[in-house]
Length: 389
Image 1 (cartoon, rainbow, N blue to C red):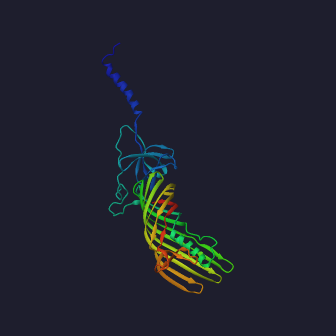
Image 2: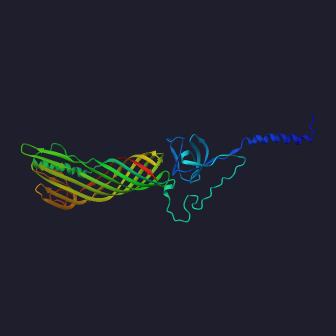
Image 3: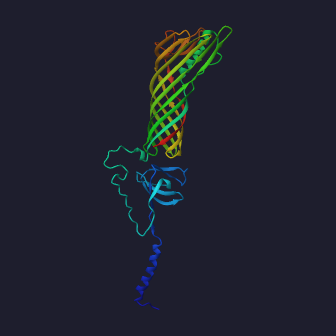
């Protein structure tokens, strides 16, 4: 049977009417638009608070969320170089400014008009304002740390043990044991740094490094009973410039260069029955030092991280000046300003023993006399807290 020509347009219109509702069942969906309300929000790799952080975004940024999994939005964030990164952000850190809707035609997303008082970055218009570092994606950080380190002030240690041996030779009685020397030092530090990028931070900081070791030696025979108290000590306060690089998430390497303020000292105190005499010397100086370290950091709260690091320090100084003070139980006091010297002195047994004293000039009868080295190079371990403003 042949259709009449007049029926063909009617049939075409009928099937076109059936197709239109079917196409309307698959409209395009506009992403949900959310705005960051926290000062600093973390985009994480997975919808989990313990997941790795892939990017940090500041307050006021508007993001497009493709989907929501439980309490987490999956969003896309455009980087400064034009790249796009995806990640999960918790709903407590954002507010929804536009729900995702079905649309028949894609429409341009209108930008939020700035309020009369602030521009699109949230900076007041018409007023001079310093750079707002607290809301940038790479803010200021403050860190405080505690730890300990090894030190190797060879001249200071050799002088301490040398005096103990020299005194034993003078008495004709060897000491019961070797004098205690300086091996370790307490360490405290702080640093203010600025994140140039997600991988690089530069900063200014200072440390306080101090070590001391008090020991007692006995010299005893049938006629003599004498005690020698020794105390070698060293202190350093470096003011330094640092650079910290993150090759991977949570791990970093750090280098620093600083100006060190150094102080070294000693005490030799001889105690006999009813009497005593003491030599106490201190000397100070300054110079350059360097350090390198590697470590890791772990987020423990919003904007707060715990870090631990191990490093090495190069710091060696010569030419320290100060004074030596001699006192005794009779009330006598003698003060001699001068330079910290390291030399060898021949004792009653004809052996030469190393000594370290602050003297106004090099002793004429000394052997191999020179200005003492105060070597505070060594390793260091520290832990601390880093807070991001």
